[in-house]
Length: 477
Ligand SMILES: *Cc1c(COP(=O)(O)O)cnc(C)c1O
Image (cartoon, rainbow, N blue to C red):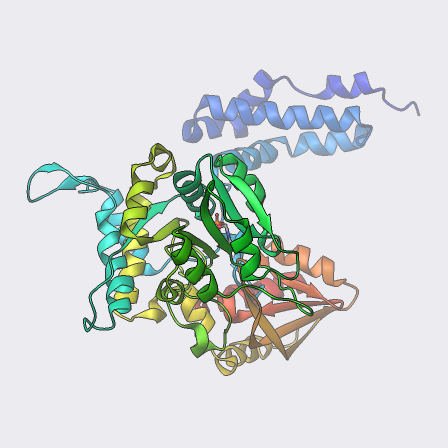
C-alpha cells in the first residue's frame, strides 16, 4: 500500500469556509458570533497542518482528526473566550506565594472593591465642599491611626506626624523614594544589602534608574557604622538600609544596627530610608515568627521613611507603601513620578478595607494572617479527614509532620509547624502525580519532595478541602 504524501493529507482538510458551514460548527455561530467561530476554525486547521508538516499524522491519523473536527473547534472556542487568569488551589504551604498572586484578599476587601468600583465614588472628590479632593485621604487616615497613634503611645506624648502614600508596588516605592530624596546625589548602602528580590528587582539597578548614585560601603559579610560615617560627604543625600528578606548571611558577620544608623543620620543631618520589603503591621511573635521587623518597630527606632509591600505580610492588594516623616513624604507626593506610579480605585478600596480590619483588630478576617495563625492541630484534623475518605487505587496517602513557610521574601528562616498529606503512587511518579493534580479543575498546586507529593492545607481554604479530595480521586482514576 502506498503511503499518502503530505500534499495528499493537506487535500483531505476542509477549507475554513467549508468547516464553518458544517452543521455542528454552524450551530456555534448563533451563540458566539461568526468572527469568533471563524478564528477558532482557522486555528484548528492551522494546528492540523502543522501536525502534518511535522510528520506526526498519517492518513489514518488525519481521518481520526477530521471526525472530531467539530468538537475541536468548540474546545478552541471555549478556550479563546474563557479566562486565562484562573483560580488555583495553593497546597504548597507557602502563604505569600508570589507566583500564585501573594496575599488573597479578605471578603470585606472584595465587597468594598465591588461596591466602590461598580458605580461612581468620591475617589478624588470632597463631598463636603464639592471640590476636587485627593485619593490618598482614603487610606492616610487609617495609616495615621495604625502608625502615628501607636507611636504616640495612647496620646501621652505628642503624636509624631507620620504620612503614608501608596504606589503600584514596593519596587515603585523604592524608586520614588530614591529619586525624590537623592536625584543626582549619593546614597550610602552596605555591600551586604545590595540584594536582588525575585523578578529582577535589584537595588543597584533601581538606584541607577532613580538617578541616584550608589555609594557602597563595607563588605558582603561585615559593615560597621564607621564605614557609613567615612563615606558621608557633601554629595550624600541618603542612608539606605535594605531588609535582606529572602536570604540570610550567617557566620562571621556584622551589620550596623538601626539605632546606630539613626544616630548617624541625625548627627550628619541626612535622612535614613529603610526598605522593609514585607512590612508587618502586626507583631508576628504571636505566631512564632521572629526577626521580621515591623513597620512600627522601624519608625519607632527613628527611621525617617520606610517602604513596604501591600501584598506581603500586610495581607492586602498589590501596592507599595511609603510611610514616614510628613515633610519627606510630601516631597515624594509632589514628584511627577508619583503620578505615574499611583494606584487605582480598586487598590484603594482593597487597602482601605484591609487596614480597617487592623484598626478593628479583626486580624482573622485577613486570609494571610488567618493562615499564619492556624495551628498544626487544626490543619492535621482537616488532613486526616481527607486521608480517611477511603482507599484510592494507585495512591498511598499518609499524614505526616512538616513545615509551612511564609514566602514573599518574608522571614526566610521562619517556618510554621504543620501536618501534610504525603502522596505516593503505585506506578505513578511524584512528578506525574503533581502534573495530574495541576490538570484538575481547579488546578491543585503541590510540592514535590523526596519522591513524594506533599499537600499542605494551611494555604488551602477550608471550603476547598472537598475539591482537593476530589482531585486525588481523579488522579488515582
Ligand atoms: C519584596 C521586596 C521588594 C519588592 O516588593 P514588590 O512589592 O514585589 O515590588 C523590595 N524590597 C524588598 C526588601 C522586598 O522584600
